[in-house]
Length: 230
Length: 369
Image (cartoon, rainbow over all chains, first blue to last red; front, side, top):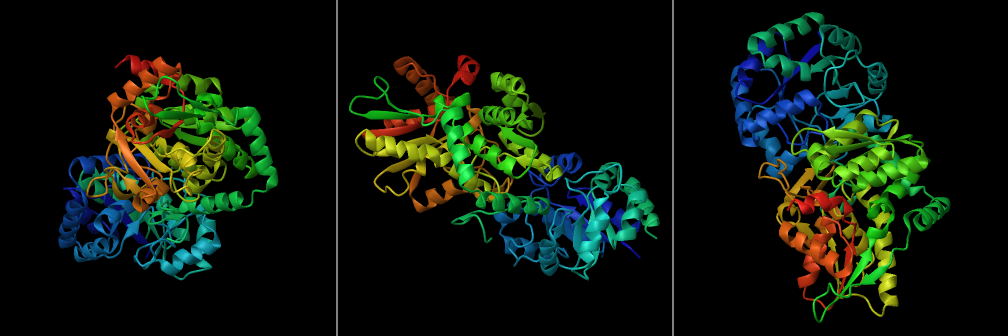
């Protein structure tokens, strides 16, 4: 069965939301640690980050949120954030404390493959990545490879990116690691189409939007994605 | 980190999508030959108006002190920003990019970019915070007149920080067709190096002109926002260890004076950030200095002690602004006025100030105070 990854921004409601997502069929939950200047993010996640920061979701509070999520679910949990937070907290200390709080791995959106290779994390590759960079990222990645389907920032798109097929093909040629596709995937149809190519999908901006309506709504949305991935 | 480092600073902290574009940019930059440098030199002479003169103040300098001004305010478009814009536009041509995006704070870099885009006939989109659009309205009109699209940025502080993020996001989304013409010695490698090389013409000329006037200055003073005019003029004197290099930051935007190591807009540098790494707001009367980051080479020059960094308040900059206008008949940019303010009280006999831009754009802001 294809893997379903759901992204949620860290916050007071996140443990209940994560539990609802997992009950509805999410296999992995990404927890966004908000940053003031998120270059890779489109308007939805940017606004969610602004709200989270206004609510005091600084690094320590995000780690506590991770602990609270871990108490409710047993699936892999992956903090997703930006270098500046690790710079301030200490790269190694961040990785250690996140793991102690229940994290399975880590994603740092502005720390591309080749930079700080000692920090074990899930690497992202993009349609613009050369084959050489795909190999580098696959060699350094922690478990699975995150395929950015679009040349752009996070956020829902009308159609699944036509660049995904070529990216999957090139990635398969250099690695046996599972390939999960994200950025721009928001509907069950997108998820089904992406999963025909990749081994799983990541849903971010739309999940964050639906999560604002509460765990019930999020559960229904995740269930619709799960159904599409059967 | 393997490339583009200034001590512990610099690097390439960007989403993967941009890495191939940065590699292409660096390769294109390294491959530039004699024809590029000839074309650049010709445009510097005939289009920008270089070399810019050094002028010795007559009434501005206090008793017992000599103050020289490197007149970048006389460049075409009224500031040093054009040195960089012309060079990068030439590079964009050679990379085959027909669309250019840029960020702007004071509007000087936006105007310079709009200008070169008109000159080369390429599409131009400039991101500008809505607060800066208010403060620098004449420059918004100039950009539009030159055919550029000015995109207001409506979130966060609505100033240069957000405009830069938004320009980078545009680049991420259009990277195959678009050239990102960054305005200062900031951003991911190779931008800090590239902009430094293009601005170092200021320092090369200034050193030669100083020698023609008799001797090297005791101190070279420049304002620092992102730091490109400062790096440009410092570059000419780095090896002259008897020449003090002094950068002047706005008191409310002192990334070097009161910052901490962090990552912003693709590079590790000294930043205004809190203990969690969240970027703090900068505050300055001068839109061009109102930025919480600074070029990585400045952070390195600070750490090694080769350059020192001090601050000037809004009021001190305003006083220096009026004093230069009233004593020399030169209206300086508010940015450059910070350097002028510190030049007045610096303990040195012969001081060279980089007058990075002219102040026409600041009249409304100055009259409001």
